[in-house]
Amino acid sequence: MSDPHPETSTGDPTGATLAPGGSGPPDWGRIDFDPECPRCGYNLRGLERARCPECGLQFDWAVLIQRHVDRGAFLIEHAWRRRPLRSFAETAWRALFPWRFWRIVQIEESVCVPALLAFAALSFVLFLVVLHGLALAMVVMVRIVNYSAGNPWPTIAWSWQHPALFQLHLLGRWPLLGDWRYLLLSLGVACWSIGIALILGVCQQTLGRCRVRKMQIMRVVSYVMPPIYLWLIVVFHLIALALPRRMFFGFVPIALVDRELMRLGILEWSVTLFCALSTFSLQAICLALALERYLKLDRPWRVGIVATFVAALFSYTMVVCASVAIAG
Image (cartoon, rainbow, N blue to C red; front, top):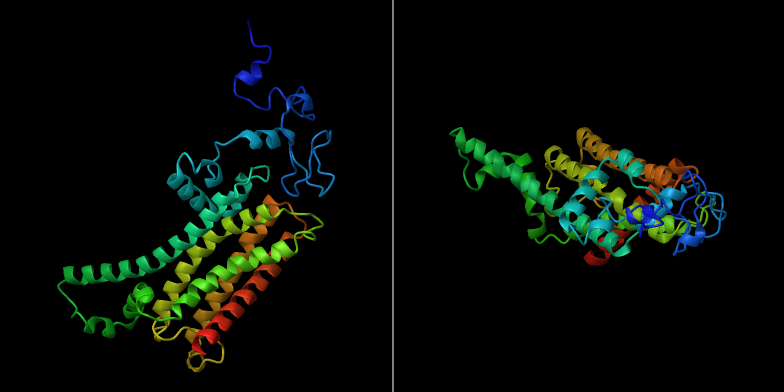
């Protein structure tokens, strides 16, 4: 006996549920789940128009239903059980290109909160590992090149004769130097991402008059951080090479009243300001792209800049408070 619904047997979950032509509303009698608005969570069952009456999100019925049952996407949220390492690497790599990433990842994608938390934690750990490992690798490579050229350096004297390499050496060994201010690095970076999540969460009822769910905010924050981590790695190496002033041993520029900061020259201040402004700009751009292309919010660039600025103030305040509490 033939199957009266061949579309279902072929594995197409949308073929048997959509109206003829695939452009109309679904056949609600054949759908055994309640589809929700990806942005605000409103129950869409029974609706005819592909528009959420609660937040105004325009969507596609076929994509919405397909994404509800599809688990073959590259995101770690969907593939972590089958290929955890590969899905993490692919998600992190694609997230480095936000202008493409937020066109591929659609708001109809189902959200897996535990996988998002794991991705955020692993991304932060990988950031620290690459930051220090790359600095040590650069020092080792320079020593190998010098030995090959017949110009070996003494075990101790070479580092003091080359302050830039000594800075890289200290950057690579910073976690092992016993400098309590190293903890402020981790605190500052973590508070940056937490600050973005907090400001978006507080404003979730007023973001373009759209009620954005917290899980969607969590996805945005988790996936906008990899390019920031990559740029911070570049920034710290640039500081290590351009500012050979014990930046990674006993002195970290935390408060603007620090006497060491007042002794920085024009070049050193220029490098510091460039690193700060470029990091802020990159964060604002990545966040605005996610708000515009993924959450489809109004005024995404204004929201992205404001959220980044508030998050930076929050991060700086937490670092200063922690330094005062530890030192005092």
